[in-house]
Image: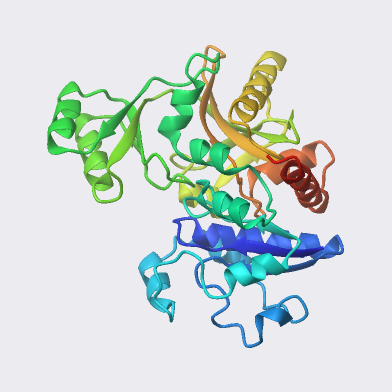
Length: 351
């Protein structure tokens, strides 16, 4: 097939997306597809040939090592020649219409929040991963928790806090520390703050002003960090993440050697079963398609706490889902092909 691997965009995970896109594109080519990487935002401005030649004369792949640096999004915006407000760069939609499938390798607000999926649905462009509704709900941590309330999925206590001076002052007076402050639609742990004191809570809320109008303030649960993927409706072996220093923030996610990852995780059978069941349940309740990956905390009492779900989990060299798939004998190239096949089947069924 002719496949456009859509990457980049304007989210804080832009560079991570390029790493995912480069690896996915190479895997699809090894599977016999004509695959090219296209930047959602900058598009084909720098492509020296007519769009019609895209699959015959593919542009060079992005640098897969760029993920270790957070992007300068202001510089990216300034670099676009046409300075259009559209998230679709020049030639992007034309390229996607030419393709048999778009593999969405985007992460964060430009690809995971459902807007792109809705646009493609209206244009009749088939794509990988979940549809617009499941993507939109899963992208917002507050909405995700609201949908899962009362379904049997255990999640830390939480509240949505609007960032007005009055509401912030009232919350700080309560001093609900320790707690976790999260930008609802953030990713890769960007906009996540662990607060052990009232002063740290004040700093976290202040840091979020101007970035978002509301935040998720969540009960802090002490325990071990895990992630558990779902592929075509079946859960994969959980993986434990052990940062060398601090918590699993952006640096510890993408800097080689910053964290240890153990898969299959060294946990008892009951905890393993609980985590797998919760990952499947979240995937089903949100109507997700092809693949997803949920994050969990396992506390000392053996409780499995759901934190959030990713509808377009990373597919970089250090990403968690490929490691989980490899643990059950699914290599990277096969994983990409299965995502393609499952997504096409879902699109053909109107999902």
